[in-house]
Amino acid sequence: SVLKIAVVDDLAQERNEIISLVTDYFSVRFQQFDITPEFCEYESGEEFIDGFMPAEFDLVLLDIYMAELTGIETAEKLLLLDKNIKIIFFTTSTEHILDGYGVHALSYILKPVTKHMKAFYKALDYFVELLNLDKCGITIKTGSGDMFVLNKNIVYIESSVRNLFFHFASEIVQASGKYSDYSKALREDHRFLECYRNLTVNMDYIVKPIENDFLLKTGEKIPISRRRKAEVIEQYTTYFINRRGF
Image (tube, rainbow, N blue to C red):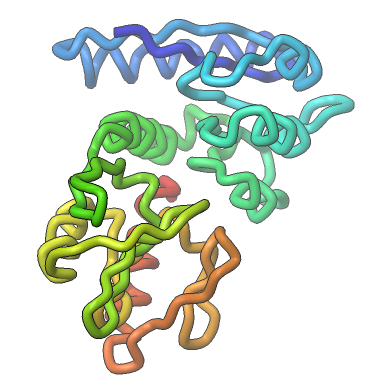
């Protein structure tokens, strides 16, 4: 299969180096799976945005320090056009690291990349894992029949008394069946964490912990078990660090 990758950097030498490293990565790690990266090069954020089409690229490799439109500004515009776009940033400074996560970057790799290969390959590992996870789902029972949902679209599930709810970014679905069965199935996908009694959250939707709650990208706050707080925070922190490629 072909992976379409955009490389956006104002220096041709930097683009060539990144393309060479990514090509080596896929030839070494995925030759048995017949994955072939296909690259499109862009000298500026403006050039990339001008011709951008949603779902055109599987991955965007984006330099932060570019003339006029910066990498962060380019990413902000990309997210307005394609909220599912996957971005890995490259930079010579850690100054904008929080800005990078504000636009949901997969990772933040320091230049020269050849001196940070472990972090870069870890970020690419996470990207490939996401491609596979994008297809994972679960069947839930509802009043109108069985419903297959992708795990990546589930924000969290909760159960109270006799009611069981699946929370998505734009809707809430009431389901039947046992919370424990759904939670166990979801927690086989390492993105999911039971952070409170009868509440399991997709950690990709967590912005940060605030005291005894998690703040979610939806703007909601969900509770963290006080009894298990240290364990829950440790599990989330480990996931966050591994996901970012540090």
